[in-house]
Image (cartoon, rainbow over all chains, first blue to last red; front, side, top):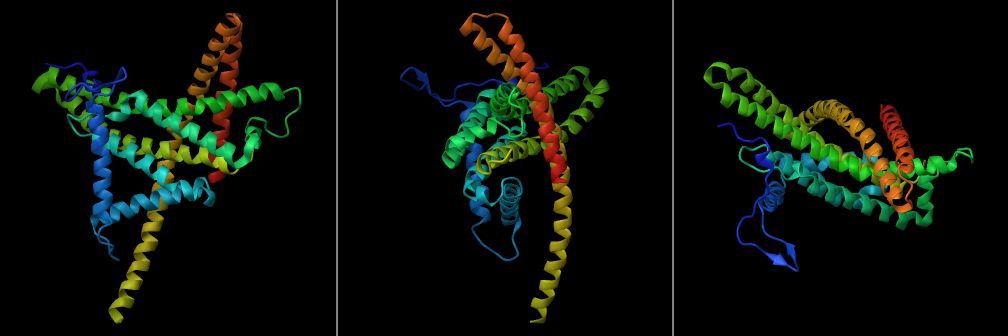
Length: 244
Length: 93
């Protein structure tokens, strides 16, 4: 009766197979849940901002809270220069948050528990930040790899270390989100399996664990979206205000 | 008019309350977020360093020296990342 805990991460095709130039572009359950989260975000924000009341209703309150939260985070971490990038970071945060939260519903699919999804987002952030840095500072952006006040003998070593730490950014960004989501969901499934296999007599302990873990997972789902967004802000800050 | 003034003071009180609460929440959130951040920062630099060493090794045919060197460089970069992140956290407080 207890199913494989990794079964929930399986990607399967919905509808007909679509192949363009040898690349499989079929609509899968992952695409479905990405679409669902995008639609949910649009719906919540559109309904929330439809009536602009002084005393906000529930949906308006939620949308304003999201807006304030991200606006405050950007101005705190990256300063006023990062204002033009607000829409991008807001989209990123909302998408990760809603993918994580939709994944918490039973029988749903967690898009962010696949490293390819998180890696693409992280690589996009990485390339965007690098391009912004070069556009703003020209080749002066390379000063990021050459910290000031270092003895000339140590300079090559430090530069290599700085380059490694710069390249490790997309890896840490993507692996963190993916690992947290996947580990959490696997754990939930494993405890769920214990409940089934221990039956009515012994199943209560894993069931209570399962309930507690669900609460923890919702916290993690929010926190990981927050961390993803705030790290994007920090990287953006490095690119905009070059100071080492 | 009296009603409006009443609403204004109530709004002010509610604002100050929610501000206090928001600050607390934020502190808590970033605290947990930072804790999650540090671990992966350390590991990812080591992984990236090792991968770079592996690639360079297969380019220059110098197995296994560059992978060893870059593993240690990656470890240094990871520790350096963590120190920098911790410094940033302290500056914020």
